[in-house]
Length: 187
Figure 1: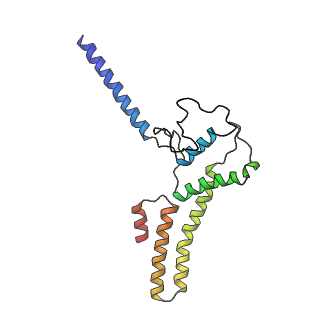
Figure 2 (figure 1 turned 60 degrees about the vertical axis):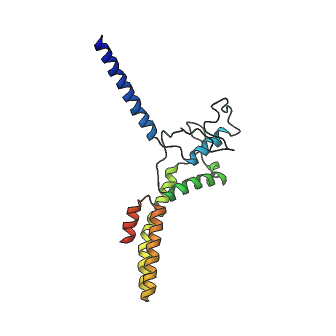
Figure 3 (figure 1 turned 180 degrees about the horizontal axis):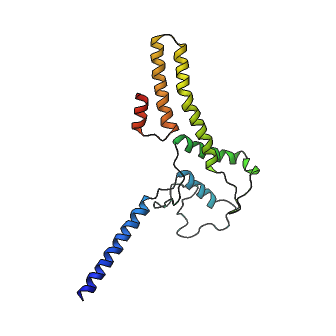
């Protein structure tokens, strides 16, 4: 009888270990972004939504009137790719403004779910080009201005200003760490 007890205990430990591993994997999933959550809330409360959620689970996603009143354990299974702050801001604002301007009239609905949507990748490509152009123009512009200005005190002020500008651009246009920003601006 002792072997059965040990086997059962070993099997129980395996189940507990597996449950802990699954729990840690679930906790590693990110929470939904505010923009995505409000999109789902607007979708669920749209006039064309035939079957709104009713019952005790109707507030899982929150509501338009109270968007932060969603279930605290929501997770995102396939989150958007994390980009730099500038790209994230442009994606959120551009998509909303494209719909407001009526640009959706020129697009065809999806064959899968029948709604019109914009791809983040197209807008991210544009923001990539913008950040690349800004990154190449800052050093060139600083060299040209330093060449034109002859006063040493003005040159020192310009160098300080471009260091601050480079730091601000690195902070907003990239996802660089603080140590990287410090190292680049110190150089």
